[in-house]
Image (cartoon, rainbow, N blue to C red; front, side, top):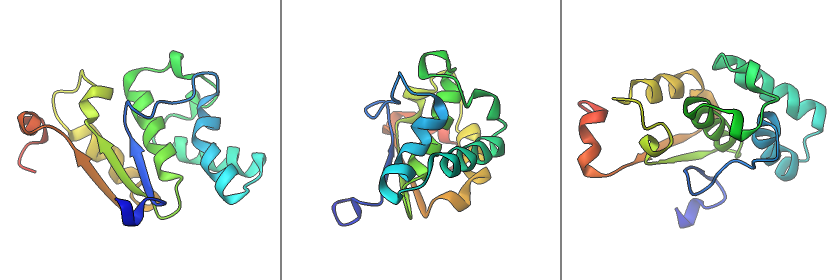
Length: 134
């Protein structure tokens, strides 16, 4: 991680969404501040990204209004906004505890696989049943 720290893009309860910002702003912040993307361009890009996950309807909601699944997706999209993102998902079942397996996680990653370079999922050994044969 140290050699790729500028590309590291965490999805973790330790890196929460900004509660007083709308979903689209939480996702767009990285592009706006690190790449000087305009507000209009950033908003359009985020709306297109949310649409891929069938979540464009949550763009103007704030964190407290989101379900756990929506929150996970927003955190994932935010991480993917890092240039050449090395997405690091830390214990995803802490974010979406009601899921019995990892199918949703991998289906979501598949829908946006062109948004990141690599994705790592870190979890406890005792959670391995939720990941099936992986």
